[in-house]
Structure formats: structure tokens, C-alpha cells
Image 1: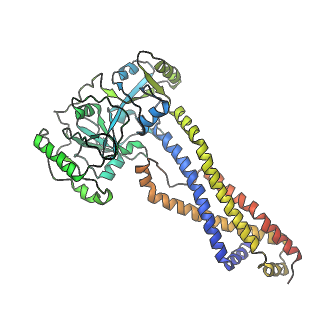
Image 2: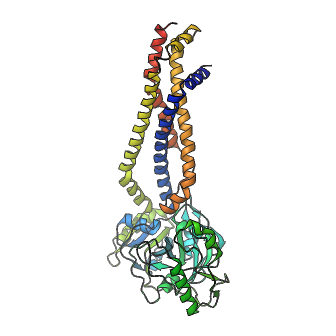
Image 3: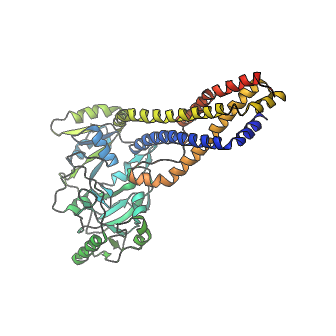
Length: 470
């Protein structure tokens, strides 16, 4: 009965109530968005390095090494020789190693040189292994396995050909057109940087550079945009060379037409089209040169207890200048660096919510004069002063709960439309589920602030109920 009276009373003041709900919706949406991004950013970073005990790279900063080797951001300025992997594998506590080499790109996506150990041992999330949903892993040096986002955005399928690029900036003027790669596999979506990566064998990376030593492992991850004329030129050069009898030189793949409207200024079809998924015998996976430069090595241990001693041994090695980091500890250091910004953003969002709740209280207080007759009627039909007090509290909570529901649906809707864009542009993978323990605490806090802010109009209504008559 009391709730029905509150609803009818709010309907009579719909203009001011709707404005108040609108202001509260904006402030609560801001608070929920800040908290959700903060929580999801941490979860996204953490699930990317599941199962990796150590990351070993050239002597550099711990944060630089983590961001570059795992998230493909920043630079490390140098490289190390591939034979470092064999030295690490000799340790009795080392179960597996994954070499990674970065520096090239394909149409804005990072190219990662590695071995098949990457697909066998790399894990994400709750120790989930990678899954190849189409095709297979490497069996020849001129093959590539694409992340889910790469395949989707560029419209690639199995047997499509790709050309790597090397350089800096939004446009690369150096494409490895003499060594096209065949797409032989596409990975399932992981919600990690793996989705936005082109994976190729280390042998293929070395072959793509030819006699050029791939020593500039300086963290170049340029976003390139190949024009149609550049693609035609690349295709023409390859056709003239005629050095790949196993594939044809056709017109651009039909998927390019289907995705052309999504990539303005890009030529979205495959640079080449191969005819067989079978490994090319002319490009076997030969033994990797001991001096082949790589960017980092992911290490998994048989006994995690030995991780600190192994890290210390690597970092103190005077013969080979290396850095060994624990991903979890470095991530904690990263969160400590940005904790001030987190608290600042949350503080600002809370201030906006409190200000909106004060506005709600002001609206209720301002309406008390015009509600004198309403309160007197309620008293006449037997409503006690405490009933009037509860009525005003229910009205305030009803307005805030309505704003909370609208905010949840609004934020979820915005995330639904921006989810893929945030993942591809910022590398931020956000789920649509806003409900976590911290979010629940925030919503309860908003209701508590509402009750406190509405005490003044509720007390005023209580006092009026004691004195007012018809």
C-alpha cells in the first residue's frame, strides 16, 4: 500500500523526478563503467600469462619486458640469441620453453615468430590451452597461424597468403614480398593479445628477412596500412619471380570485397592464394640457427618453488646479460603504479554520485511545501508520522533503484556495441557481466548514501506530519 502511494506521488511530480533519474543514471553509469573497466583490465592482463612461471629476455626493465613479450606493447631495445633457450632447458627445473620474436607486422597486427611449442604449452585464463579451430599448426617455414581477431577483421581463411612488413609508423615501405606465407590455421578466440597476432615459425621469420639479420628487435610494432597499389605491386613482383609452384597468383580473394567497408584505405583481400594445405617440401622446418635473434623466452617449471632461485641465477649471470621476471609480481607492480589513478577516478565518480543524491534530497525537500495537503490527508486517514517518514525514504530509494536499473542496461548496451572496438583498438577485453563482488558493494553503497541524503526531507516530512492539519 505504501509503495503504491509513493508511486502515485512520484507520478504527480514526473518532470522533476525524471530529471533527477536522468542525473542519477549518468553518475551511476560513470561509476559502474570506471569500476568495470578497472576490474576487467586487471583480469585481462592476468589471464594472458596463465601458466608462465618466468619470462627471460635481454637485459631491460621488468615492466618493458612483460609488456613487449606478452602484450606486444612498447620496446626492449635489444635481442638475445636463440641458443639461450638450450641453456635454459638444461636446468633440471625447466619443463618447457617457448621462444618468441617480435618486430614485424601485418596490416597493423603484430607478427610473432615462435615454434610449435607455443601451441602446445601456452595457456591463458584458468590454464586453458590454445585451440586451433581451423586447420593445423606449422609444418613448413612458409606457414602462418592467425589469431581469431586477425582472421575475422581481415577476412582471411585457410590457404590465403599474407605478406609481412617491417618498419615504423602507420605505413611501412618495406614489405617482405619475396616470401609470402600461407595461412594454415586459425585459433579460437581467447580474449588475449593472441587474438590479434599472426604466428609464424622462427624459420619463416628468418627466411622473410633473407640475408638481412633480424637484429633490430627494438620493439617495433608499427600499424601498417597497405594501399591497393602496394598490394598490386607486391602481387606482381611475386608473380614475376614465380618461385612458389605450389600456389597460384589470382585476383584478390573474395573476402576482401565482403570486408572492404570495414577497413577504409586497406586492401582486404589476401595478397596470394595457395591451392594446397599440405606442407611445402621446399620450405621445411630446418633446425633454427643458434645465433637467430629472439625477443624473449617463456619458461614453465616442473617445480614452481624453484622459480626464485632460477630467476636469481639468470639475473646474476655475468656471461650473458639477461633479465628474468615473474609475470605475476611485475603485474602487481604495474597495478601499484596505476593505483593512484584508479583511486582518483573512483573518487571522482563517487563524488558525482553523492552530488546527484544530494540533488535528489533537494528535490524531495523542495516538494514538501506543495505536499502539505497530501501529508495532512494521509494523517487524516490514519497514517502515523513514521509512515510519512518511510514514505519519503521509499520514494528516494525508488528513484535511485530505477536509475540503477537504467544504468546497468545502458552500460551493458554500450559495452555490447564497443566490445570488439575496444579489443581491437585498445587491447581491452571487457565482458558484458557487470556483477562482481565489488560492483555489488558499490550498488549497496549507493543505496546507503541515498538513505542518508534523504534523511533531511524525511525528517522534515515527519515534523510536518506532527503539526499539519487540513
